Length: 202
Image (tube, rainbow, N blue to C red; front, side):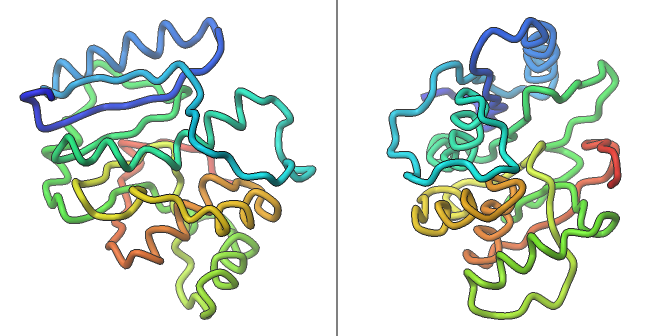
């Protein structure tokens, strides 16, 4: 086990030529913030949902496998105090601040709250259905950048029936499942600033 307390992890399945450039920026950032770096390049052998993709999903198998891998990352928090997950299409600039130092409270999950700027009513309705209660707020977090702590149950165990439900009904099953899971586990989620996840609003 590494002596470092921080991990940066990404998922790069397949041979997209952009991966090498992105990976290089991740490695440089990991060095800068004193974190280990892990690039997952093989699909997980963990049981996957039986449901077929709905019509809104890309039928690319590697794409689907990568999304499923993302919701399986919680086991990494057994080995590290904090884990930073990054999508493979994220670019880190050389002057990026140390996200671990900016967001110091290691009892919380940090993600960008896109629900404050975009209508995610339909996705929140799906989460309400699985939680059996109405969601009053509009919080819906983007799952491209996730900073999460150790031993919090946030993503440590997959609720397979719930995941299958989102695979069948959600436009972004991985993201909506992750939003479901933070609510289900009652861990506090805090919005990252656009400085750490500058995404288009829609």
